Length: 180
Image (tube, rainbow, N blue to C red; front, side, top):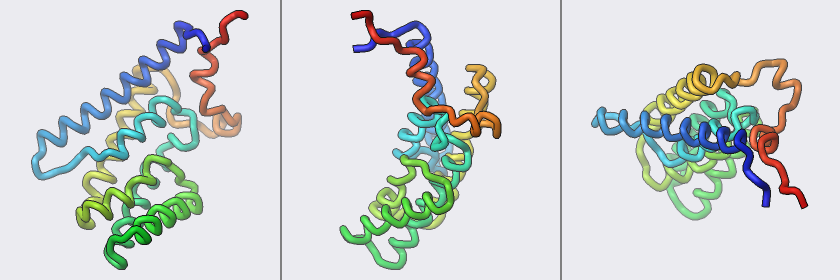
């Protein structure tokens, strides 16, 4: 089992703190504005990628925003055209994955959005509120948190993208194997 360095502990605590801050803000807005919905379960999974692996291509703004919006639109479209059945639930997720891959907006947490909208039938307004508004707020919190609090450049710049930074590099660089 690897030993935990101070840097690994700091990285993990900062990531957890960022996720906590973002979800707390979304939940507070959800409570304050009775007419609006700000929080949905897939956003919790987005926290893992945005705060735990901010250098991952999956954590970049384009992926987070369009991944959530496009997959929600897919789920609502399948629901509207074909209804809900085991086949259409699978079709919704499959089409959402295909669309994210074809548009370069792959964001794994967004893969749950077709299931969420097909099982709850929230209506087309769901795309705007909570999905688009929530994703934008998540990105704003992520930017402030990484750039101003942690001093970590987010999103990836062109030069850092070309360097092909490993998504796991933040933790791997901080964790060392025990001496045998």
